[in-house]
Length: 323
Image (cartoon, rainbow, N blue to C red):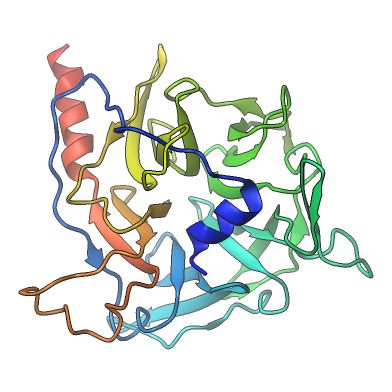
């Protein structure tokens, strides 16, 4: 089962429809994405959501189908090491890692028990309960090359049993998908931090109520946001789009185009250490005459892909300068 399929099962995400609207801006064409570390990391496994340390030499990502673990790999002399389970992962269903911009901690999603001795978190969707399928946000601090003990984020953030897809801004605030406090609908939320404590989350209004939004990747300075989205009520794939922030709020998301978006979904957006490279996962496949079409990893599973956001960021900077 792909990651997106799991979300559809657990989160009742049978929402989508029509052609994805774009921002009122000239069309931008990006380069084709490249698969991440083929052979070393990308192989015959189902991978996604790559979170990098600021030096770019450590990556944490999720691997699995029905049961996910967080894997860790290190780049040594330009080569990525064979991934191994992160020291804090491997027992529970762990997914959606997101590195703090300064690399001091990692947020991730897990069904692990809220307290020692309890069972895994159940997902409660309406009147249905899915045993052990819940998702809450957790934090684990980095200590040198190692990790501390994971700590569940407070109920202010984890207000329901399906809280997932975190992304950390430079000020420590977190963007994520959770239950809207006004009606319980799963939406894009933002929880500010004050005096070391998370404040009650607020909804991030992008595209109004026309789109289902998932998997945010926030720029450290909160100047732009990449999300996966699709119109409410359709069965179209999730597609990557970018939105820019100004004093007037968030712009209407601009679709990253067919060159970037491919397969049945493009999800799990994460920004790389340069804050201009996007990592995401997709089940896209390469076809002949691409020389990689016969590669073992070109099997229709979810893999980590990377693409530069420079065309969209530079075009936005030129528009700002022109005004």
